[in-house]
Length: 171
Figure (cartoon, rainbow, N blue to C red):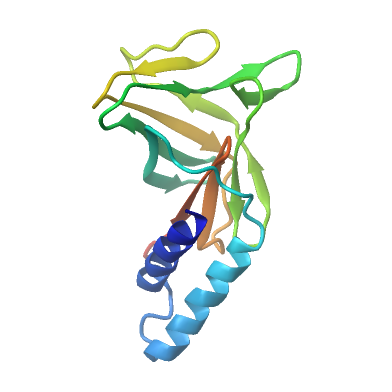
């Protein structure tokens, strides 16, 4: 499963690589190096079950890096746990045990700062959202700002690993 993520990441990195004007061989080498660096620090991912997760947007500003995350099911109901801030532990936890954080290609960790749920959506105080078959739930996760030099990373959500790449913005 992690191999599939890295392959998808590699393809995304090829498209988003700043060296698109370089010969194809140099771009391939740069993307492979980037994927290898990130892959070296990723935790072991759990296989997907009936609950699917997808990153639909990554936004980088001076104040934060936000990821829009969608949890969805296809044919079976599933439980989805949101991160909940536990004052007694002083941190965000998923189902009282997992964490949500970002890793960049230099293996630097960025801790979760907050979460935003769209108006009209609710979850239990423990962060539980029960999804019926074919249902989706969207939320935005807020992290410290990623440096401009970061080209790729991964969201670690409990035991799930979701790689992403960042396109350079025009000046």
